Length: 119
Image 1 (cartoon, rainbow, N blue to C red):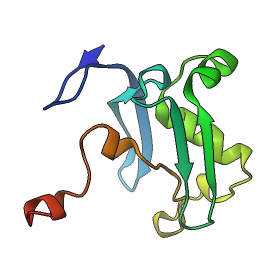
Image 2: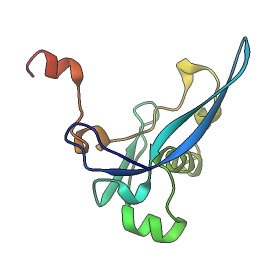
Image 3: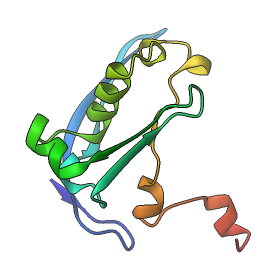
Image 4: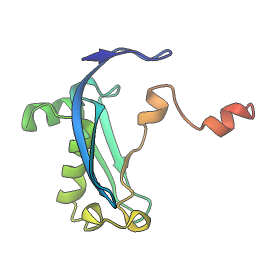
């Protein structure tokens, strides 16, 4: 499934079922996840402020080596291979802080607060 948003190129996305446990039981919903092959840069940079991890990968080499997958699943694989133990933590205040370093900027996003203030 493809979607477009203000100024963004069409991204091929996959619906991923997300399940989580609440006090009322198990909740489930579907979210759109962009695919690795549609990452808007040739280099994929992943970093974590909590542990200081910084990794750079070649997008096309990753697709050839491991196949195309959602960015969320890829991030889980990257932090697991880096030895992060926080990625399985249920405490929201002690979760892994890994993120795609340049993804928001590459997609035209960024700091909404700074944009609102004219920055």
